[in-house]
Length: 237
Image 1: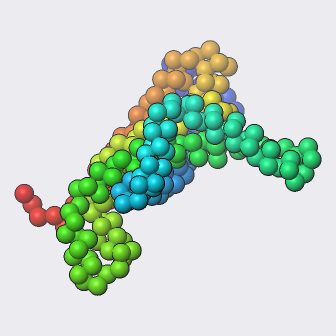
Image 2: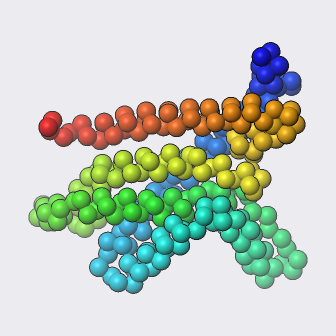
């Protein structure tokens, strides 16, 4: 027991500092991916809800691709494919130039793409739950299309989509573990390094499980409070 406490302690003799940095990277990556995924997912949902067939087709192709590919494969395509593309572009301007893709940025882009493909379906379902009369009421008050969307539709959209988006956030938080495959020093990567060095895989991988579980529980509690806040104006049933 004392040996285990020494291994997970903070300081030069333990791995607590490295694990804490890994947790910070994991949470930072999830939080950085979330807004991009939400905005992109909302735009994809708008395209799917559009009356323009070409927009609907393009949005459907987008969601089919990123919902159909394994998340790890998407991450590899963004990381290695993006690096190859940037290097080709750089060589057009400077002969022999090379560009290294930051693993954090690559992970953020890949996770945002996957998250947005699922979030678009959540937003689309929420759009379908809002009656046409809500739009007509906004126009009758003299609001433009953009103001009607921002002041009338968007608050209802968020409330309707929040349960599904909350589940997607928990999935996103766990999928950050994939970035250890491209060398980002997240929680899982540091747990793996510590397990190999100390020959104590159960201790560190078990500890990582508990940390992910704690993050999920904190997120669930926060999402529950947000959902309660969004429903504060509803009449009791």
